[in-house]
Image (cartoon, rainbow, N blue to C red; front, top):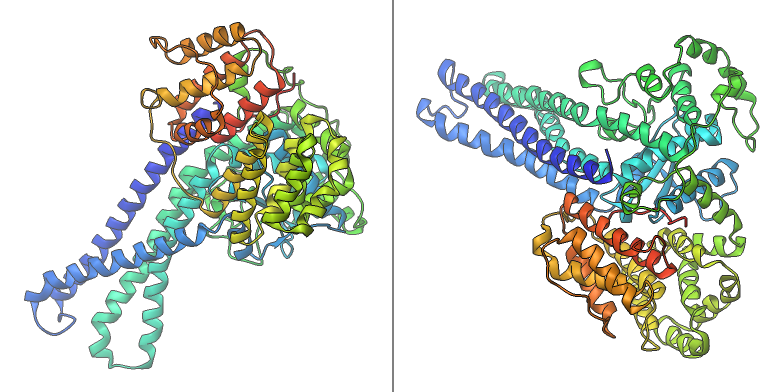
Length: 635
C-alpha cells in the first residue's frame, strides 16, 4: 500500500468514524428515552403532570443528551486545533529545550531531525513525558505543520539508538500517512461520549445533598441512565478506536522497518515492552483519550477493545523467527539497566541476548523512473536516512544551535536568502532592517559566511530544522516575517526556484500551524486542468533547452491528460505568483488524482533520465504543496 492508498483509506475511515459516532449517539439517546418512557408508563412523571407530557419529556431528553455529547465533542475538537503540542502538554509533556544537556534528549532531537530531513517534512515539536517509566510514544496533530512527537522517559532510558530510531520511524509513518488527523478527530468525537457519562455521575453526586428521596427518584433514575449509557458510549468509543487502530499499527511497524532497513531496532523496542515490568503503560496520567495514538498499549484494554495487536504478534510480523522464550530471558536482564550511566547508550535487546542483528536487504538505489518517484512519496528508505544523518552531522554547530533557538531561528532562514543576494546584499540587508529591525539584520548577516560554505542540498534541510523554533514566535511577528521573506525574494525583480521554494515552504508551514485541520481533498483532475498544465509548464521550463522543455511538457501532459490539446508556453515573468495560486488549488485534489499528478510531474522532470537541481527543487516543492512529502532526490 503506497502513500496515496493510505490517504484514501484514511478518508474512508474518517467517514466511517463519523457514521459510527452518530450511530452510537443515537443508540444512547434511544436507551435514555426508553428509561424516560418507562418512568411515565410505570411510575409518576418527573414533574407530576401525567402521561400527556411523555412526548415533550422524551424530546427534552433527546435534545439535552445530544447537546451534551455534541458540545463536549466540539469543545475537544476546537481545543485540539492548537496543534499536536497541546495533546502532549495535557499529558504532562515538556518541550525538549533548545540546547539540551541531557545525553538522551540530544540523541532524541538528532533522531527526530534526521527522520524529518529524510522524509522531507518540517521537524515536529518534540516532547518528553518525564514521569512515565514505561516505553511509549505518540504523534499528534492535524498535519506535518502542527505535528508533535512525544516519548516517555522510559523510552529514552531503556532503548538503544537503533530501537529509538525505529520507534520514531513508526511515529513518522503516522505523521506521513494521515493517521494523525484521523486519530485527533477520533479523540475529539469520543470525548463527547465521555462527557455524557461524567455529567450523569455529577448529577448523582449532587443529589446526595438535598431533595426528598421520593421527589428525586425520577431524576435519580434519569441521571443513573445518563451515566450508565454514557459510559456504554465510552465502551463503544473504545471499540471504534480498536477498529481504526489495530491494522494501522501493523502498517506503521512495517513502515518503520522499511525506513530504517533494520528490523532488530523495532523488534528490540517491542521485546523490551513485552519483557520489562513497566511495559508501555502510562501511570502518571489517564491514557484513555490517547490510547489509540500510542506506540504501545498505554492503558491495558481487554482483547475486544484493545487498540494494539498483542506484542508477540507484532514482533512475529517483523521477525518470523521470534521465540517468546526470549522475553523471559530479557526480563531476567532488566536489572542491568539500573546501573547504566546517564550519558551512556542503553544496551540493545539483541545485544543483551547476545543475538545477531543484521540489517535487512539494502533499499533500492535512487529511483530513475517516474513510477519509483511516486513510490517514494512519504516512504524514505535507508539511503535517505543515512543521507540525513551525514548531512546533519556536517552542518556547522553554530548554525544548528541558531536554528534551534526561538530568537535566532529566523536569522538562519534570512541568512539563506542573503547568501544568494550577491551584489544586492546591501539592499536586502536594508530591507530586513526596515521590516524586522537592525538587530535582526546584524544577526542574520553574521551567519551568511557559514551558510555560504554549505552545499546547496543542505539549504532546505536547515530551514526545516529552524521551522519549529520560528513557529514559537508571536503571531504578529510571524506575519511580519512572511511579508519580509516575500519582499526579499522580489527585491531584484528575479525570483529563482530556491527562493520561491523556501519562501513558500515557510509561509505554508507557518499558516497551517496557526490554522490546522482544514480538509483539503475534494477536487478531481478535470476541474484543475489549467492549474496542472501551468505547473507542468513551469517544471518543464527549468529542465534545459526550449526544445527539451516542449518535449518534456508533452510527455507529462500525455500522462495526465491524454486527450488534451494544450501546448507548452514559455514562462511568464510573473510565474511565481501564478504558480503559487495554482499550487493552492491543486492541493484540494483527492488522493488518486494527486498520485496521477505526481506521476506526470515525475515524467516531465525525468524526461531525459536525469534531473537538474531546479527540477528537483520544484518537484519537491510541488509535492510539499500537495502534502505528498517527497524525500530528498538522491541522484
